[in-house]
Amino acid sequence: MRAESVVGRGDRQRRVLISTISPEDGGIPANVHFIVRTLRGRGYDPILAYYEPYSLSPHLSVPSFRLLQRRARSEVRHQLDRCEAHAIGAWLPELEFTHYLASAAWKCAMDSCEAHLTVAGNALASLPYLQTGRPFLSWIASGWHMDRKDRVEQFSVGRKIVDRTIVRPVVHRLERSILQSGSVLALSHYTRRLLDDIAGVPVVKDVLPSPIDTDFFRPMPNAQLSGRIGFSGRLSDPRKNLELLLAALHHLRRAGHAINALLIGGEPGQPLRRRIQELGIDDAVEFCGYLPVKELRDKLRTLDLFVVPSHQEGLCISALEAMACGCPVVSTRCGGPEEFVLDDETGFLVAFDPTEMADAIIRVLRNPKLRQRLGVAARQKVTREYSIERATSCFWQAFDQQFGVQ
Image (cartoon, rainbow, N blue to C red; front, side, top):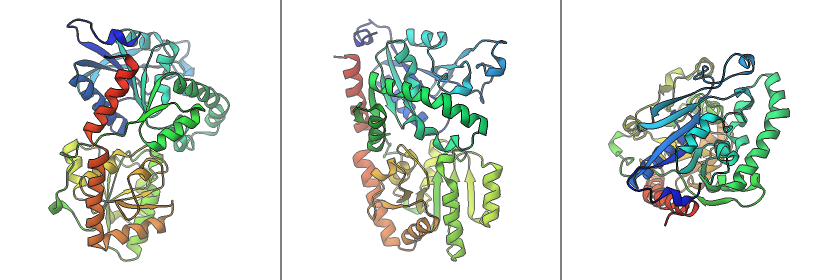
């Protein structure tokens, strides 16, 4: 359905479908929230659709051992800013490429809308649009392989064999076709290079970083606690590489530095708690679950330094939010953060080495003047390059071009 149908439908509110992931906490739901708010600002009615993970709603999907016993289902809910949301199950969810196949439930959701977007970690969420020949605009954070690389390491031997022989070859072909068929926005310049390489030709139209509300995320110097370093992200995500941060903290404590860490992002599992005990840093680590945005901001304001230990990040919204609060960042060279964590300007970049990370952390914390200079520059960087106004303009330019809005 071409773009002309997105406009000029009388007084009826125009529906736009957003194919995404299950709306939990994290970077992608934050991006969806921005798109929802932006669409509503121009009078559109945003509708969500996503594959509901089998682990969350097993009754919606049909795994291999239930193949002849039931059918895949979907549910209509109201989630993420009270949007109409279609939680859709899949046949054979073990194979992953089935998650976004254009089933009857997907077609029903697509048919009810006049324009089609994707906001997701990788391009696979655009598959229903590709399979039904619909024009679409995708805002992508990473490549499929990079989005799941660390998670695959935890697969059983049998699942790794299936993944290597069946899933990966199929998804690689699908991912390339999707990227070559739609209009693509990348989350960062790092993501742009990654997606263009996957597609084999330049496909990314523009870079749209996650915007940061710098009026809301702003410094409060009196809240800062000396010696407190912080992290915010899904504690259960192996890509976040928390082992590196814990090892660096262990190194600093052994050297006699009074440093503690605040880890935000869900409940820690037993392996993480056990590792902290093994390192002898129980008294130096505080956990916070997922927080409402105001509480998250207040916690970020208490940090002396924000740390990104990740193996891979398409951008890292939490680091940008910390920077907007005037907090410098120490990060690994993991992709997206390399674009805003600038050595000796807004923070420091380090290798995947606990000693090097510890050295960078203590370099900042023992020098208040350096910390102040880095924090001021960090906020200026976010205000200048990651504003809501800039992101909104970029989105509407891509949306209007793709859907022919005059």
